[in-house]
Image (cartoon, rainbow, N blue to C red; front, side, top):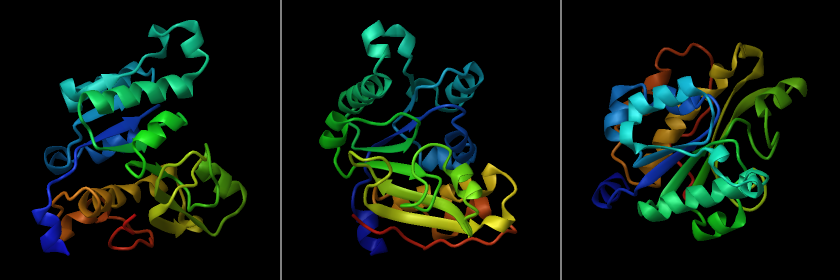
Length: 225
């Protein structure tokens, strides 16, 4: 399988992020990730100037900022639709095949249909449990035994598409959100390796977690759609 994956051409992809964009900034703070797994474009729809500055420093001209305040009042009243249309336009303009989603907006039907099975969301819970916003807090409030993450294909329902990959940790070892979210970094590499044909060395998959002391559960490859 590894040999055939290296023969296939890599797929182009963009990243969509919001708010503090912590997962994107942390993942690409590793020079090797930035040089070998770099997205063609990064779409940011947040309003934090310090985050935009960090993203510009990291991605330079490949960063595209979507500012709702530049839209008409009617478009601003429909932020999910407006954001989806903007993302769709970027993907078409730059002929990008896949989108990795770390953003806050709910993407809408036109984009979901046009890029069926090519929009991959990274959600911080073990789906189908704890969908939507503040998923880690939901799990903690419900005293879940495990916390974790899911990479899944996006469909027209919230956090309900086909599951590609999941990770988990014991909730009694939780200290901060980073304990859970850092488990997404090897997941990103597996998605890029197994679905988008990027050359990722086995030794590099868990590089960011090499010093982790807390237990974790994670497969070594993706479930292909």
